[in-house]
Image 1: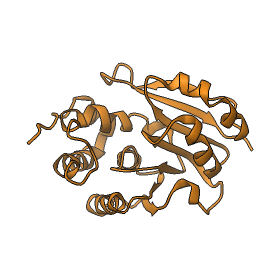
Image 2: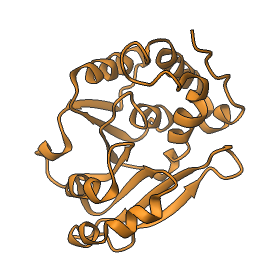
Image 3: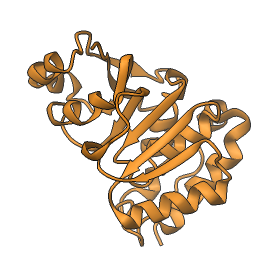
Length: 208
């Protein structure tokens, strides 16, 4: 069995009083994630650092009603819902087995601030009502903007987790960014001095 990463010291600081829920979720993902096709075989030794804390550190950026597009194993959506119980989270995921996992975890952790929606973002029917949309490891920015921006209200935000190529992705997405009214797309780094690998996001405001 692959060794599971020990909890980093930063975890308790990031999650505060919610750390026990974060531990339960992370342990469940370590125990079941690979068998259920949620994470790859290389992930348990870096589950806290690379996935859970990478997601959780951006929690203070959100308020109101937020969707996580392509929620998958719950990264970042479930992690953010644990860290920010005062925010309403909608986890959008099309794959049935992943939806089953998300619903199981919402129930097991008693998360009353989460709705799991089996759908693709392109099938969203509720209009531009969200205060923000996030996503992690879904697709390149140029294809992500057209499926996320329409969900967000005027003045709301896209807060998308990205890797080292984030600036290049912005450069490649100039046309869709302009088309969907996002004029201030920029890269921000969150968690410096707290995480060994800070989180990089692309952030921008939707103007209609």
